[in-house]
Amino acid sequence: MEDEDFLMCSWELHCGKSLPAKTYFPGKSERVIGKDRRKKVSPRDLQDGGKFRPIVKLFSVLNGQTYQGTGWLIRDDLVVTAGHNVVDKLSDKPKSHTFATSVVVYVGYGGEDTKGSKNVHRREGTKVVTSYNWVSKQEPANDFAFVKLSKRFENVSPIKYLTTPLFETANLCVVGYPGDKQQGGEYGAEMDKELAKVQWKLKKADGLLAYRIFNFWR
Image (cartoon, rainbow, N blue to C red):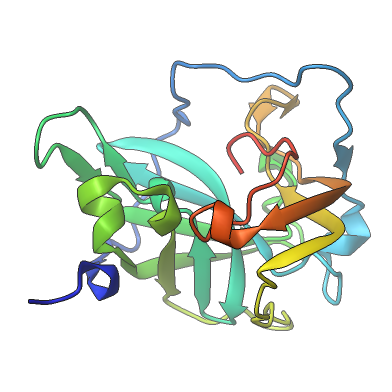
């Protein structure tokens, strides 16, 4: 019998199609309780050579609606993102999933009005790979996906893989596009960051890097 932990699902994406104009957000809302310590990322950190340049803005089309999220480049043509950005379970019924049909990725994104700038570049996804256990069971430990791009990004240094220690206390910086904040009427337009000292124990968190830093819809 095959080990489900090593089974993967993959499918091809449509390229060259326009995204639906309206971005969809789930009905539930999340808000920061207490002081919001998130800070806007400096625009220079999103430019060529910037430390957050490989963090990408992601738009995915599922069931005819556009969702948004955050990902990061591990290769100049390969993005890692959350599995829920490309697969959504519509109900508790078996096989009630909807899969992304299109994915668009931007580096340097700072809102709709920045799309024409020289520091913002766009690529389309051609293929998605995610865990079978995420599709079949929605297991949090398997909430990840890879998106292959149609063309590599130029002048971007992908994030290198590092082994996460089983136990550590360290300063952790969480970066992404929070969907609860808006700029110019656009939710998730700007990249935020939050730095905090955290402690994690992977063995007690089912292999997950658990932390208390607000990261709504990143």
